[in-house]
Length: 405
Image (cartoon, rainbow, N blue to C red; front, side):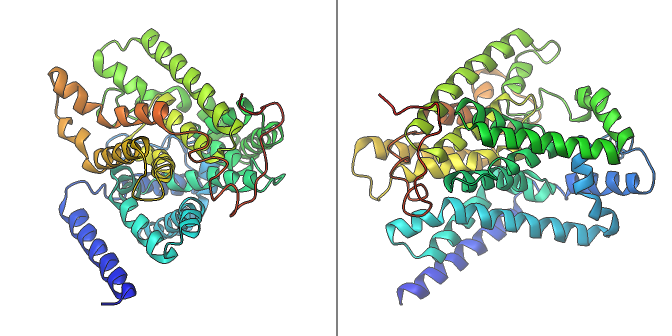
């Protein structure tokens, strides 16, 4: 059998196995979140209260009004066309991310590009956060693509860098952490562009939808019950961890201590990454930090960890790894991937007890913490990174961030 036929057979086999497993394993979410978007935006377009609409079990629209403006085309679509439109947009976002993060590696190491991208796409589909994002009908992968548009622009020295992050932050608050990244790494122009874009989009929403804007910033934003219980197993954030220690009275002081610790580690690591020309590691670490810092990080939000997995695997290339450090990184990437595929946290959805239960119920959180601390930044994936040099062109460190001593 020729190499091409073997590759085609491998991809077809993987797709078949994945399709069977996804179809048989419990966990399809019935497009619940896109149903919330569709129902709330449709209700709003007909003159109703955007934040007053809820599903039969009490869930309503939780995003800023600019997100609702972006979703207004849904009001003109029936239910099934809405699902199709969401799947197409998600597929485009995935295609962009694979082209940006994986294609440069395939070019550098002489791999078959279609085969590398197809295999990566299969691996991506196996991740629990990705499966949940698709089956809930969530916007997470679209937001990751918007933020990583700025990575693409930064690596090319474009004056437009920051637009993607600003738009993402106007749709959902979590990506605003990347504005912090631009600030602490000295990307003043890009940070200004991001802030200006986010503020401009929010002001536009305020002008076009003043009542919804007033309701969001005075009521909906502060109503934590709109998003669910903090202690629920699906909340794999630091606050979720703290809430599970004492669901009745979560210790906010402990949470703040953990937040400060994560921020300190994040600042040190992203500045080191950018000093060494490793923008991709800086973005990856920031995505991990966003998941830890957000008060609510549902399992589907953990798609922000995907670029970190790519950075970790890229640091072990070429294969087979030539040294012990690279082999350990590859092992760590494999363990993280298996845990994130496993759906382990759902085993404890009906309750947990003891040390084993505590470890299991926070399984995805441990992966996030490990990636925050251990993701390689610098020479392993920085100045020599194919996306930074031969594919994108070197642009150098930002003003105010000197060379590493």
